[in-house]
Length: 415
Ligand SMILES: Cc1ncc(COP(=O)(O)O)c(C=O)c1O
Image 1 (cartoon, rainbow, N blue to C red):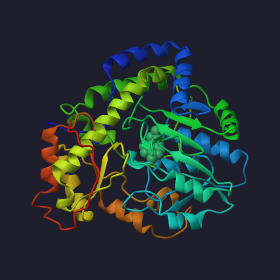
Image 2 (image 1 turned 90 degrees about the vertical axis):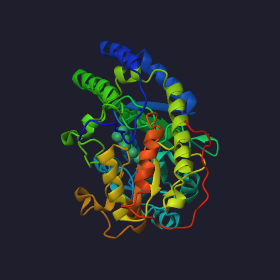
Image 3 (image 1 turned 90 degrees about the horizontal axis):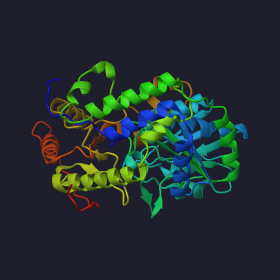
């Protein structure tokens, strides 16, 4: 790739000063961790909060804790989600059960979900993909009286709301990811929010078995954050984006990830998290509205997947078909427009899960794989980028497509 302005698909803001200050955590101490736990407990009305090394580590701990006192083994997840989710289920020694998704919402196909809930199911994992709120209340109604636990996957939705309630407060237990492309980041990190006493007690037992992260791993994460902070800028991102061995943006199924408590350096990096998170989410929602309105997407035959209170970690849009998606993503790579295909396959197609899943097709999830493209909404996206994105989405090579225009709710302020 040639040096040129290049956007990353997503970018969580963090200042160099926050990073420099965080290095002090290398010399240990525990008081910041306790303070962060208290802040999160208060903000998310949680009975207890646990800080761990990643979102998948958070899910693994939750699942192991729930399974410790239950003979149930099945975990229901959307057939289109991050590959880390089935990785965590397998790592916890449990069985992945897939439920198809609705391409219009990326949420569960609820008719199918209802048929999957039985006495062998340990939990269901509704997921706020790209910051769009999933209907957790509906999942809870289906699970009522069945003994099935609702684990809210808010990995991509920290700071978002549904019906005025914060995401992460809707399920029986919830988790956030603080990975690099998320709403708030400390490199890698995860937060568990537990509400009921039995769940808190079960997670405490599991959490007590987690070791502290080794010093070398802590230092490596910090260094990666400094490098990321430098190269995430659109003037420099062409460099890492052009190095295939970095495998940026790749989604992998991997069960061999670290399970640690969150260290003090990561905790330090999260100082001022509430302000930073609110600002980043506001900017993203505003840019999503500005992209939808400014690009007139529905008229171009491109359907944004909106949601009343969506915070748009990225803006998901459905293009005409697989061919158009591939063309759009290729052209975006060529000009550094930051558009991304998101997950490359349904969970059913992950080779490592062959033989572990019921053999069938997931038409909704497959449609999402074939047609979904995400547009960047982060703080570095400017008018120049919007024009680039517009040219790609309406370019002659792709041709015009005709579908009925649909109404959509957007934020009205342009950044
Ligand atoms: C929906 C979803 N769940 C879980 C995870 C796992 O989080 P982490 O990458 O912090 O392990 C991710 C990460 O991208 C995610 O997008």
